[in-house]
Length: 179
Image 1 (tube, rainbow, N blue to C red):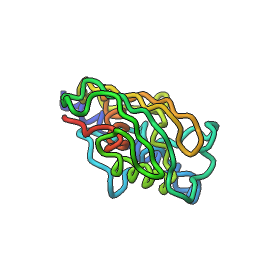
Image 2: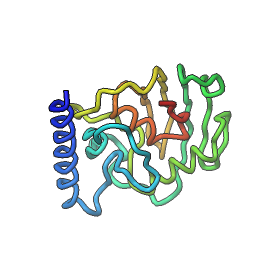
Image 3: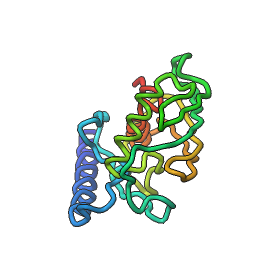
Image 4: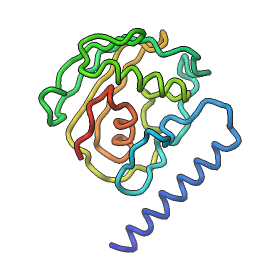
């Protein structure tokens, strides 16, 4: 068991170093999908390599981050969060913030922050990503609508470390994870 933990830790660190090393030459290009910044929260266990992967630039609208605050209209549906007030379907509009979302202003501010960092908060976990095998709860969410004029249809869950990190990146658009 200790050997397996050590191998997992070494593999996670090696993958993270490899991804971060690959990002260095791309300075000034579109930032990776979930790079840890001052607002990032720690995820228990080794750092998953998946959320550090560059977003799929073939998706429309991801060639350059806009310079203005994000505008969008979303339907956010959450189930199984463990908090009755957080479960349900909410409307969220940004530019200006509004709708039935319980934290519309904070959610729009978070989207503006991610947009300013050139991140795609709706990008899925990269195929083949190494993710910690942990369970963050049964919560699921779907975000549909438009963001900067582009269609959004993203699903979220907490089934492994990569998905937990992806969920946390989008808080408070999604409710806080209860681990």
